[in-house]
Amino acid sequence: MITVFDNNAVKKFRESLHGKLIIPSDEGYNSSRKVWNGMIDRYPAMITYCVDADDVIRSMDFARNHGLLIAVRSGGHNVAGNAVCDGGIVIDVSLMKRIDVNATSHIARAQAGLNWGEFDSKTQTFGLATTGGIVSRTGIAGLTLGGGIGWLMRKFGVTCDNLLSAQIITAGGRLITASAFENQDLFWGLRGGGGNFGIVTEFEFQLHQVGPVLAGTIYYPAARAREVLRFYRDYINVVPDELTTMFVYMAAPITPSLNRLHRDGPVAAIHVCYVGPLEAGDRVLRIR
Image 1: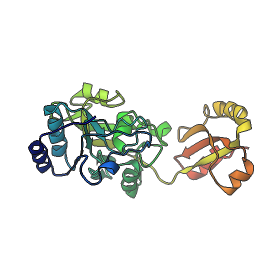
Image 2: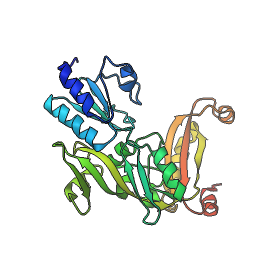
Image 3: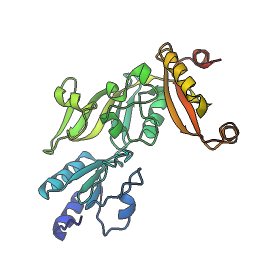
Image 4: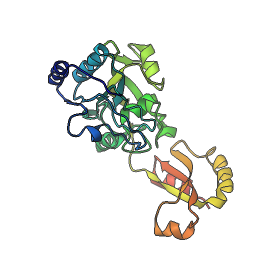
């Protein structure tokens, strides 16, 4: 899809931004339109790299005035490729990475461009964390607004359970706050409601004391998958909330020890993360 704009309109829009505007004729356009899923191959009319809420508002205004489809990208990790569109505008907030941690109240205010690795790196400076993604490169925004599962969820709930408030720009271009105390219906919708409520530029999270964790993966031959699943069903009914686990059926990682044990390829695996005293975690996971 080819979208044609008046050159003066594009020039004026570019000059109004504090961040950067990329159009198809600009160097770097092809790399800028890529997302994590390499099967997604879409061609937006423009990409705005926003550095503040004003840039997001200006981008939304331009899209509204020109009838453009909007896609919003932070981490770009969504498998369906929702962070990029054909012929529309991609509003990219990945440069908005400010995070402030209050070590006394255990609260973090984080901009939408952070990924979970960056978020955790800052909060762990204070021995704090909240339920984040399974993969550290996932953006905090998409995961939180989708509900959010992660390695701490059995102890502290899913990500949206730990969301205290959000600054959101509505479709009409207003910057408002949604929380349990203001715009409550919108706050309810943001916590896993499916999207299209606006563009969130900043999140406020409840943090928890989290020190070293006991984590890793236990592999079994694929031929034992039925036996392992029956054990796993009973095991997770009795383990403490400090332990989060995930069962997967996967190709064996390429390591010498696993290749010797599982030459046929697939393995049954249980990922584990114990958040609590390491000695207690060792007893919970020491399975004969």
